[in-house]
Length: 368
Image (cartoon, rainbow, N blue to C red; front, top):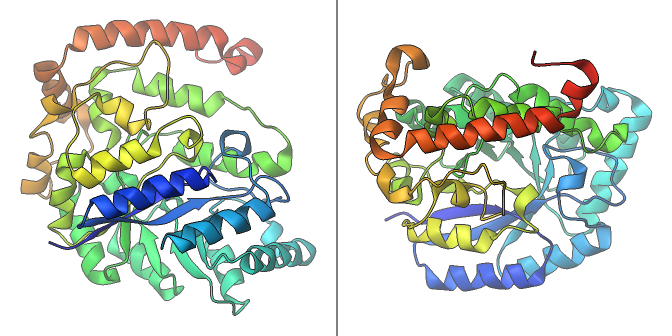
């Protein structure tokens, strides 16, 4: 059976690298080969996470951490995956600043980057350094055409968009066209086809340079959207540990654990242990959230009761028609397996709580 490779969020702690090393020795057919993250000090360039939600690190701690990870055969990948830089990459002074920053992280021993913007990919390639480039999930690669466009930019690896996680024929086509270096996120927490998603990432990309940290508009809207319907839990395009094998069967070897925001207080090693074991006994949402303590409105969804959910997607290329009201599969499945009334009760309470504390509603009177 082909080996599965995992890319995981960094907390910049050597003890966590030791935990990953133990997992690599425990499993023969699954390996943690990459940790990823960004520095918060000495950094004026955004990424796909808010600066105040990721572990604090500066250039010196990055250098020490990446060196230690390397000693355990785990590479560090630097996330430079902002979806917008305010056109700074086209301004000579700011482009030179970015060049200088990249030379700095290269000198710190970093040779791998995750980037979402084609303009930044071209800028990095122009430096003629030995950076390996991974096209971010925020590049929204949903089909072969987009995958090949990034291949023409000479990226080394791509992360497919979460929205196609259950389109097995599409993933297989991308894998065959691009090559083996195709990665996918497994512990997805975003609602499929969420209207807020691209704008949320733009907001997070700017929070380092704008100084406007702690904005909750999009995170609150994300939760409110999920709470509209218990079936939305099934529409988050997650991949259970037990279902990894279906992706391995179509040639996917690279899997990513999202959760830089959960790296400090969550338990990434525990998440990995379950995925590498390809078996999990517990609450699905706990796993997806990296066992980060969450609110009182967090329903318990026994993972074992979701057995078989993925099968129709594997068996029929056009099973999901992206018309949930017409299809109804996700709603029926959760109603048959889980106490949907209890989820509705919890979500109703959660919706009321969020609307009471939401600053945008208080200031502008939104969601009337």
